[in-house]
Amino acid sequence: MPWSLDLVPLPPCALLGGPPLSGLLWTVLLLFLWYCYRVGSDPPSHSGMLKSGSGRSSFSRSSSRSPVDPRHSAPKASAAITMEMVEEEEGTESYLTPVLSHAPFPTEAAAESKKLYRALQEYAKRYSWAGMGRIHKGLRNQARINDRPSIQKPHLFYLPDVPSIPFFPRDAHRHDIEVLEASYPIILAEFQAMYQRGIDTKLGWSYQGPKGQTVFPLYNAGVCVASNCRACPCTYRTLLSLRTFISSNSLGSAGFWLLGPGATLGGAYGPTNTRLRCHLGLQTPAQCELVVGGEPQCWSEGHCLLVDDSFLHTISHNGGAEDGPRVIFSVDLWHPNVAAAERQALDYIFAPEQ
Image (cartoon, one colour):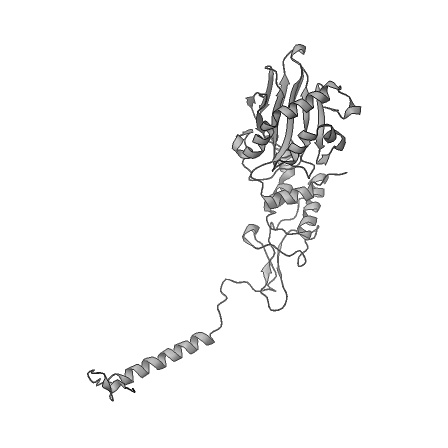
């Protein structure tokens, strides 16, 4: 049944004139249609977005940007690492290459640091600069680290802003520590079998340090020693089951370390603070001591110590010949505060030379 506003019992509107309220409703309807037209025809706002073609700018927090397709950017070895505005394919928004620093690499840097820096550039060209800020900063400042007097002074590579203490709690690598300690009996048995065969370089042993220290390596600077691993198959399988074992670059090693009675190794720094050395005690006479960063600790058979050997450290065995050697199974694990992207880059930069 048709109906009209005239049927609604409303008082007359003197200002609009005509039928009650009909003029007001038509006015509201027209205003609504005009508003919808304006909203639909206005271009979208692009406030805060940067357009391409505006040159270069510096940017210090690369982690807040999305990763860069290496096809669009390739850092040059001779130029400073900068952020470039790069055009993407037609019809897409431009993006910013992550920027790490606007300063050139120090010309006075050592040849080794320059070599590592070129490797970092190659990695970024192949993958991305995203997440590489700390590594880049560490390579730039390595010469300064080597020159300063400090209780922590890794001589090869120092990663900035990594929490460091001489001895780490078990919770830093609880899974791997529990795996090693659970495997203590079989690791000890395989060591004793190797030890009874005799210590000889022809049998896979090597001598480290000035005197009294002998090593049976399973991994040496990121390279698997196949013959030694075949001699200790259960220990080798235990290594492979660890989640954070450094097995793909020259910063990581694993093996049996012996220190003879009366031997002392002192005043040494490890090569980097990106790793922790896990010591599983196999044979630990009472007169043996490890001092890291001025803090003394003793090994315990069947238990692990997590050591940051980038601190100044000394090792001593003050027992007699009747005590026999101190024996540990040493495994290099990633520092828990090294991110996954940084681990991948360090594997590339410190790829073992075979």
